[in-house]
Length: 282
Image (cartoon, rainbow, N blue to C red):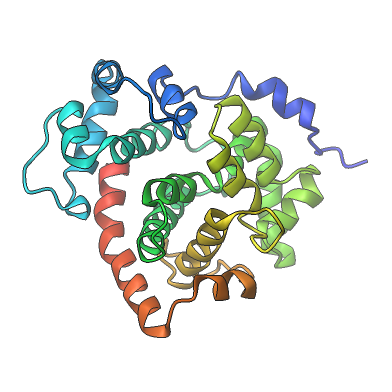
């Protein structure tokens, strides 16, 4: 038996020890599919967390969202950007700041978030072209690999062996996770999704983003899959050794975009990425 293998019970037991999101963000994630939310109450709750508010407003005022005025309160952000978009920004601001860094040898925390943010940005650009909900796409893109942080946090020494295995054997991290830990980041991400009460929409995308061609995977997983591949191909994180993941031809064709359209997607993603990354990681 693999001495470093984790079982699901190990992870579940440690979920309570993982970083917790602010209560208001948990409410936002749970309510992502609901329309009958008291916006003024949520805005007031968020405003009590000054760091979260500052980060959210920095993001809201980035040129990506095209506001003609500078917003200085969460309520203003909701007024000008809408509830869904503001909720999406609050979630992004909270999630990117809640995990400890530097615990795992060889794990690039900053690179992880840069990749996640780039995938979120690209997914949002693709979603707009597909007339799909951009806020769902951004949130799912941001969270698609969150299970990696779960595994890193639960057993940093074991995950360091995963990283070494992937490099030594020239295999992707997903395969190395299964070999070393007996569980991969998709499964760990789903456990966190249950714990953090993600909506079914986001959970489905997290579960299927590696295999969006499976029956019932949903179109959001297709968008995340393609966005993830694009971000790797553009090497937006600056890791030349990282392999581009295998792209599902079914997912690529399902997007139905021309070569010219993809060139525009690449350019938009690169233009928006730096500013959003600075807002979320600054």
